[in-house]
Image (cartoon, rainbow, N blue to C red; front, side):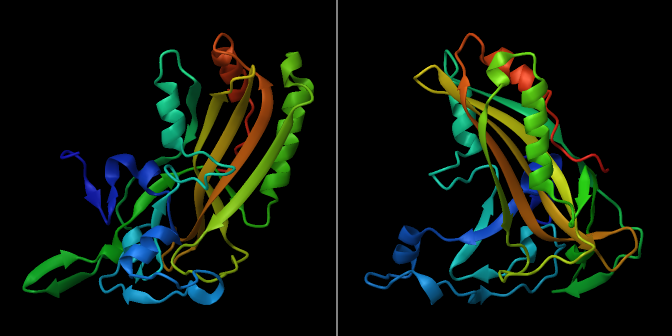
Amino acid sequence: MGNLTHIAGLWAEHLQLTLRWYVKKKNERFMRFEWNMQEESLQGDFWTDEVLEPVERPAPSWSWLAISVYKFFKVGFLFGESDRIIDVDEVYFLAKSQLDPPESRWDDVYRAAARVGQPEHEVSEKIGDGNTYSDFDESCIEILAYANPIDSDWPADFLRQIVTFSDTSACEDDCNIEFSIKFNYFPGLSLGPEAPSGNAFYVVISEVQAILLSNNGQGTIERRLAGLMLVPAKHMHTWRRVRSWKLRIRIVDVPLSRDNMDEVAIRWCKCTIIPSTT
């Protein structure tokens, strides 16, 4: 960890991972402990956007340092979160893959290329406590990734590709599959129901495939995509992050065992569901 490069709250060597932050409600049990609440109801209008510490030092929109410290909300990361009901976090899948014999398999299907960039415009300097430092707000990163405009119907397109793959597969196990799809937006710089503008783009940061065995000779295949929603920024050729998003496609009751898990994983990795625009 000591050799990693810090940039506005993220690690430069792991930008694809640390870019996947979002704002979420704090855990109710933690809330009661933190604020010594015993009988208060935590439903309905209780969850306000009350700010404890507003942002004082500017930070770029892709950094969680651009988020105020809220009383009832905190920053989470898409690689380690789950709702405990219909989703399983990545840490759980990875732990199962390390068992002997393994009970899951994890494959990185796609990762965007991301690196610390150099702004094309003049960077401002600020003076504070006698020290000169670069304004965080002028920091930038460069991303080469797949993207689609906001008016594209991603979920429907993904479903069509899954169905096409199932119908054309030479393996009988791929036929008559059952699957579900879940697409979520997550708050960005604003907690309110900010409507995306017509010039926004979905940008894919990562796509993974996770396979999990069950005890009845069946298994589950999950394809997960995570990324950012961007809109044009004030400088030419720059973009501003407004939200993050996650797409999960879950294929259930797949004939699966430890003997064929690798074969199934390789076969389904060929089902490409990322967009075609770069």
